[in-house]
Length: 314
Image 1: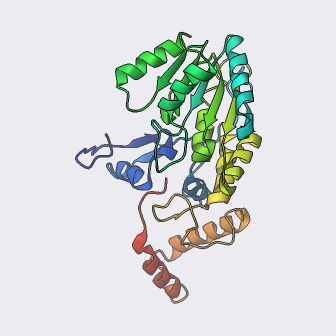
Image 2 (image 1 turned 90 degrees about the vertical axis):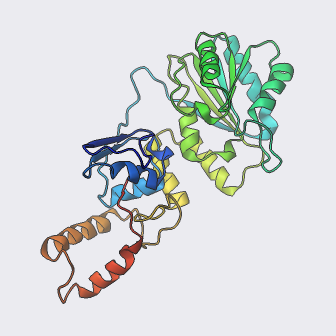
Image 3 (image 1 turned 90 degrees about the horizontal axis):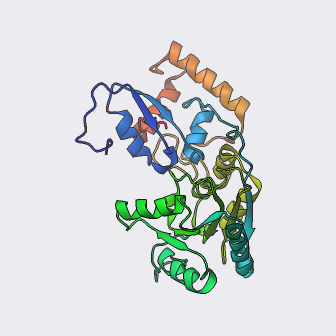
């Protein structure tokens, strides 16, 4: 609501963007432009490639929380092949019989002719009648009213529901310490940030938790993501790997991944990038308009390039 153009905040001094990876570049820019250049604090468990790249150039300062809350155990993550689906369901049943609860996430609400992927409504019916008929299953998706969603979540928190079948609406804001299994069906349909966010819905209690990634026929890029998620637990490290896979996008534009229009040898060349930043700061202090004979050519190139710049660097 705050980023809509009619909203005016003339004395805005500080902008805090939580779940930063869920917003587009122009959305964040519109909010930070509502005051007299307010301070911006962006928070994310898995920064998008563009934001991570900007930290390298000094456009964003970084603070990393690299410790788990006290008492939390690392979540065990496994990519489950399609022929092991029954075994995965058996593991979910075993956890529920031990007194725990589980999430099953599907990419779609209802089946689509255009996208071959599992849908929450259909899966809820199938799982309730054919796979877990003796258990209590709940359904949650974005087309439900706020009251309906709250009722389902309340029943899940009070353990009336054993398994919650859901769309990605559970990505953030869900805290059920007794839930120990996150089964993501159609995991190849999600990016690393979403998968890591889903995984973070479990592992919030004292019991060992698990994340099962199910994908029937993932492509090459999806296989990389799934194998990476199996190996890496840290969100910031995942973001760095995502940067290598997808590219940083445009540092001065709006694309948040892909090959940049500004070419550098490598985003991992920290020493060279630090040296370039020091030289850029020196130039800004001694010749900010780049009009001296030594810097005239550089100034012309920069002014030509600057036509597509956006003010936001988050």
